[in-house]
Length: 383
Image 1 (cartoon, rainbow, N blue to C red):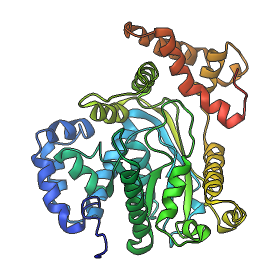
Image 2 (image 1 turned 180 degrees about the horizontal axis):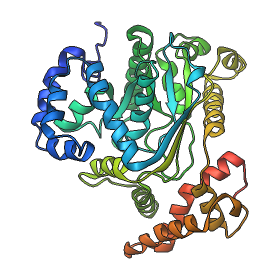
Image 3 (image 1 turned 120 degrees about the horizontal axis):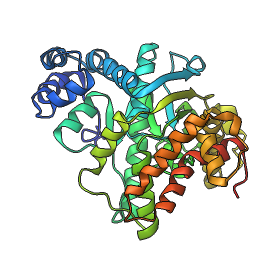
Image 4 (image 1 turned 120 degrees about the vertical axis):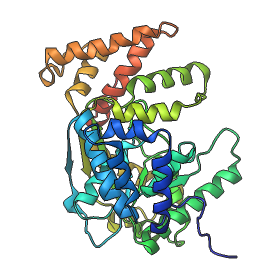
């Protein structure tokens, strides 16, 4: 059987970049996108920059770096990074991150790693998002690879095959292609503030490796990453989705909803943002779990990642305030200002326009998004 070349999921090669740039600049949405990202530069100037790109590196350095900087300047009060000194520039890492925004989590990490000389990671991108010529060309030019997302109609056999193939692609990318990989700690964004690693992700990582479960994970050089936003991207959209899921038992996305979430996440003010590169998972830590069954081993590794990610998570005044508001306390009153309290109350009040829902329930879900990290990081028992 011929080896899998992953043609249908892999990012673009350098040879494919010129064609992708021609399609991007010819897309009807390009002038609007260009004007929003770079209002101080003409559309023709941005078009010329893209058309001059001859490689993935060209695209990332000449377009993505200023693009991410523009988003940071427009929508944040600053982005900080800690922990990159823990990584060896001679090694390739599997970055396992909590996931709050569809594109920005990985885009900002990519931006920082490029600036620091680490080389950029390939990025997982759901097949439900990689649809339409613009999204495909943009994503694959930026080292994104397509990941099949299970649905209610996906059979266990199909899901197993998806997982095996994803595992094989990740391992090949790290060990043969020599590229970093970024992946979320679970399927989809965190919508309730509770960052937790799916042990099924750990199982998937090991599927393509040697029979020895320790070696299968050790050669991937797993590094947990914690991202913390002062103002949660798409918080209102997440509240509405969570509410509908609870009411109906499932949530069906509407046409164009993913694109709306991407654009909202990019454009919404996010306050301060912090990324923490946590301690890499050491082989010695995995060896300490060697006597466990595979199922227990996967669970223990997932919990190890959780401890690292929660340990690196930065709590903001919005988190402490939401916790006090949700539980009717003043325990953290020294962590926030009256001005922030007024701003947060106005954001909660904005939910009143959704009067076809239970507005009090919506407000509680909004508070939950911001308050839960306090519970998780501080180990506070919920009431």
